[in-house]
Image (tube, rainbow, N blue to C red; front, side):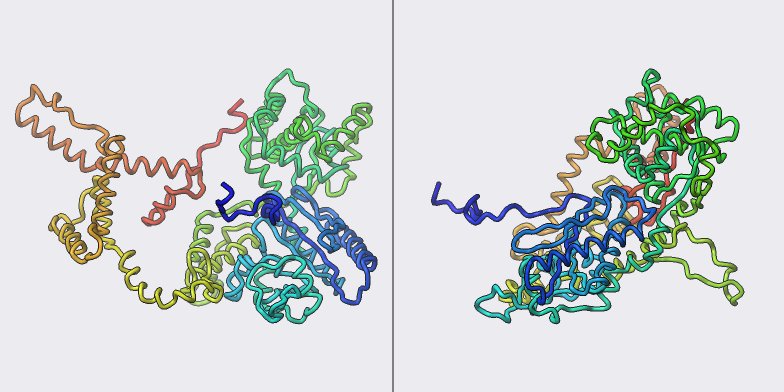
Length: 629
């Protein structure tokens, strides 16, 4: 047992811990003060504290009315492995905009402190490099990118391979063709800061999503009129950021959280009484999460929703604001009553406010006159950014955006049609994504794992000559006859052969024999292997009844007792039906698969798309709340 060596480092024998991995939807940022003129840790600590105070001032001025999806930007002083730094970890949930807002804040901080060096990563690693993947040098791959990317003085700086580490005792100029430790990166920045590279092209691609900041901060907010209980309106006025956890509680609800809302005997904290209509501030992500959700009306809200629907219709403004208010109120109800949220700081603050409100009289709540004096109490923003023309969306994904032509120009087709995207930023980001994907597909040096890193494949250099000799044989191994493969697939699925195949049924066999005769090394040709696999698949499918393509098989007993002419006529009619229904089950299964995707991507839609078929979105008629009641 002791003599076996499995190559693993056991605990206590050089084991340096499991690989660190951030939780999902999190961004981590680390800020270092690197200045050779600082003599001791006390001076470094003083500089870090100045950075932290400046971050508070910056966020207060930029984010006065901003609502974070989950966690906010924060910096805390930490130390370890001989280094002292500021560290922060933010869970941005479904709002990727929060992540890029943090990158913008970090860039602004780097402008104020010339000795500040910032490292920012997320669950995917060096996501700034992922954004700039098309502009990166060939040597910079994910295997060696850790701790090489830094933000300094509003620029993106990268530690190159030629950077020498002080830990290299043999050769101070040897390239470091691996990921760096944080200590090595700081040492390189301290000793040779000028060696770090800065490429304007890489920087432009990496920071592309920051092009609209700081205006994007306010553009990401949305105000909407909602009808809610007066008690909740008072709480939202005091704690406007509480809309984020309440929306998440509604969006991620489970049967346990819903239980208090679905029984008439339950005592609601926010009953639908004494309702007022107020303007509430959301982020666009939060508002879309509320707006898009189909939600069964709670028992206590049914009568009032039904009455409003009869008076104004379901498209009336009063009904829409009441429905949104019902969702928001239900979210707060689930947030406060669900025991799993007891440790949430926002929930504890809400419960303190509720305890205070419980001691008040109804007259102590804000009156209609008080509410009318609140800021932006009647503000209602346009919702056109929610409207997406899915035909335009698919056209953008395919890189076939319509050419924009101005009216009045000869040969034009009138005024420019309205865009299929209400949000111009979303359309620009989508176009950028498609452009990057197209450039990747057009890159002859790119493989299934991304760009091929020929310069870094040191282990493959010795086998280069052998690879060249075998390349021709490998091409032969992977090549196959597309027509022959299609013919066998059609035969396996019971589909009729094409005209050329029907005229010469032996052509496929001759092709197989030709392939088999050319294969001298293998006793069993690739074509024969494919055919055997097809036969096994066909046998299994037949056994399961999946290839029973005739949903209405003929019954010979039905022909008994009829004349010969009548029987022949019946048989001919059934044959004609067979010609129509031969692909019935196949088409039915494809449509069922497409429908089960619920408008999202899936195998059925992809397969139909490859065949050139574009099916409309399967939008079921959603029953209104009044109808459900």
